Amino acid sequence: MTSIDQPASDTAPSKAAFRDAMARIGAAVHLVTTDGPAGRAGLTATAFAPVTDEPPHLLVCLNRESRTAALIRENGVFAINTLAAGQQELADVFAGRTHLHGAARFSHGLWREGALGVPVLADALASFVLRTRSIETLGTHQVVIGALTGITTGEAHAGLVYTRRAYHAL
Image (tube, rainbow, N blue to C red; front, side, top):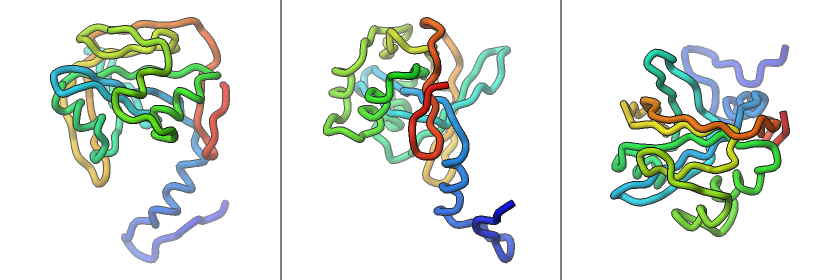
């Protein structure tokens, strides 16, 4: 076992050590979207988890400085769209790796209006529509918990996973 950055005391490991360790963990790739009176936005995220199935709630972690996080706070609704293998370009568009920003990102992909008016990716593996239940700020991010109001599932293709700073089909 290799120690990346062993703290001498109760001090946390460095940001670089944490990020390097996290890069070794594979995670499904999702597009988090919102629309409403405050506007339309979306971003790519991997920090997503179920919270409870009765009643069904999910959480996603978003950089608190992102436009999408701000609009989710204001709109009070969002969707989590799980990407399939082959949708890497769409993930890059919503990750800000292109010249497109804000609502212009929705010119890529097949989008439809889901429950609560949020954008849902038509060919996602699964799309979850949520009403914002709580937002907790922790460091640079916000943990957004949403109450599930709708689910759509697509064809059972391989999923898109991000690990070792690259996309992979799984």
